Length: 123
Image 1 (cartoon, rainbow, N blue to C red):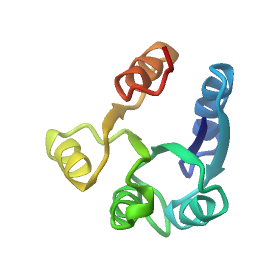
Image 2: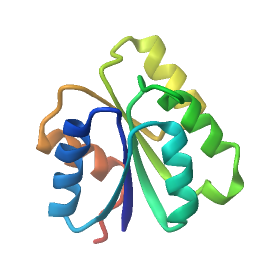
Image 3: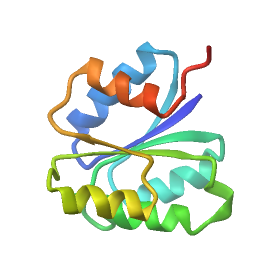
Image 4: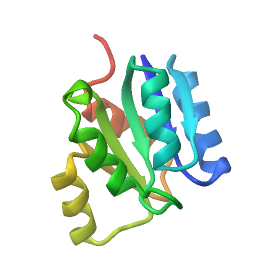
């Protein structure tokens, strides 16, 4: 399975990418939503996106809206990974098309539990 990690923090991309690789995923990275849209074009086999909210050029919420507006990406599961903790923000992300929401900081175990909720692990 190919995952795309979108975060303007290289450190966060590295942390998430390492965890995803350890569980057997191929990982691509982007530093903002515009770069991520290009990655989605380059890697049409992306099945999972982990996206931060607050980024330059195109934020995570706008990225989610852009992806959900394209039928070709209906199958992509989206996990918003952000420090935005207000219920209103969670609701906005879910209404825009996120499948799950993970608040920073998080542990490896919590990330894997969220991925399990997205049913990405084959039995």
